[in-house]
Image 1 (cartoon, rainbow, N blue to C red):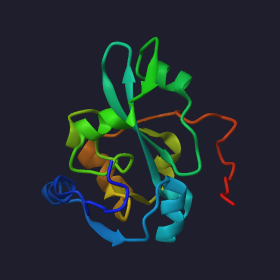
Image 2: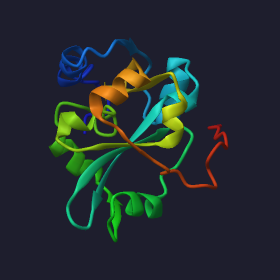
Image 3: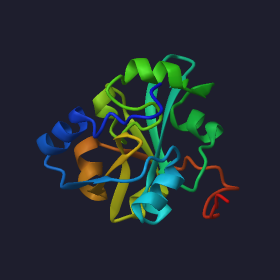
Length: 172
């Protein structure tokens, strides 16, 4: 993984947003490696910044899961939602191969770009706008959440670990 130079906003994402007529703004910000740090760099409420997690079931079904920047994915809940006996996180090295046009760990919250479904925690549905990485650790996109949802066919479910829900997490 190239850790010093960003690839810039993902061109496939920009085409997808334009093709689906999803109004959006692209922002450049200081390089950040976590969703919470990126929300801070963007100056947005972490509840409106989507942390994107690539998961796989033991049956080989992949999906993107979107939760807010402060929360943590509950794999037990993901198993139930994906109707699988086991759900694991896809390793960063494999994501680099599956999404070579974006920085590892900076996947946009658009499963269509990778041919997989997008699931989002129910708390995301309450936000009027949503930001997420634009395929780079130095670029984010802000969209109208309802337009993103409709264009993508987002599947909402309770996906967050209850101990984390609504608890702010601060980095020193």
